[in-house]
Image 1 (cartoon, rainbow, N blue to C red):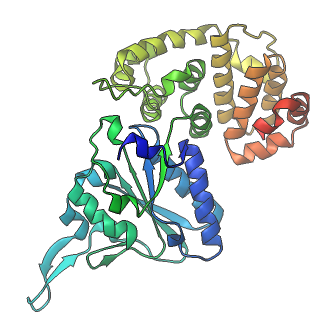
Image 2: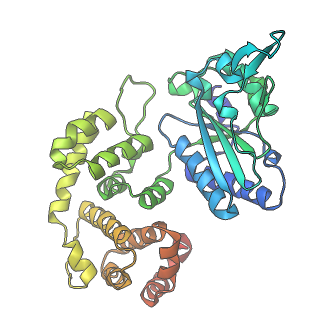
Length: 371
């Protein structure tokens, strides 16, 4: 599939796509309609843009809103051949016919209180013989004698041919069976997801300061390591879980996002050495507010990380809201808006807090952006 054709389908962030899809399926499920009312989905996008994360977001929202258990079966089609999808042939009981043992991917719970999602990842990288085997799955929800249960949603994902990844042109017969979305990187969508998922505050601050680093994938180069939403999650896992000095982790980080970006990140780490005392901010005793752009971004992400870890301490959070009143308005907005992303329970409590309500009233021009 070429880039021209991708301009003829909706283009959006993975967060928006997850919202649109989950809302559609929630409406259908709550009405008691079959999930097949919506055709099988195809998510197109560059490597690492977050397609797999989007499927997990869809599953989580459906589970939360419908109270049904959602099981995701993740199938990497690049690793399959057509026979894998149909199963293993064996003789029937009287040795007169061949029958096919059902593959594990069809071993799904058909219960009414369960929703299954079959995620066919890397479909565009699969050889065309495997894509042909996916015809039946996406349209008829069968392959050979095996049938998906009625409570199964089918979502496929793959890279574009123009990404210079392993990708085969999708036959039009298959493409016409799918509902297509083009997934594009989006800073605001990624930041909301990153705050909610506990991505390292240093990475969030760095990407806020230099947004072009969220996604610097270039299909015209042969670089093996480059920055994407997926690779930043890998870097976050290193920063959050490996007990070592950040400077000592640069080689590991460089192997994920590239040496140049890793060096920039190391310089960014040094900004945190001169920030105001975070504990003092939340105790209400800090009066100093930094003036430089990099320090303000770093401080904002650090405050959000602190609230994530202390979200039940409303007294401390109120102190931080009062401190935000002293920050330049754009950084105050950035910080207090991110508080709302941490979780729904905190969002409800914040919106009922007089200090937060007063801040909203004073910043009337941005209320819609925050709500």
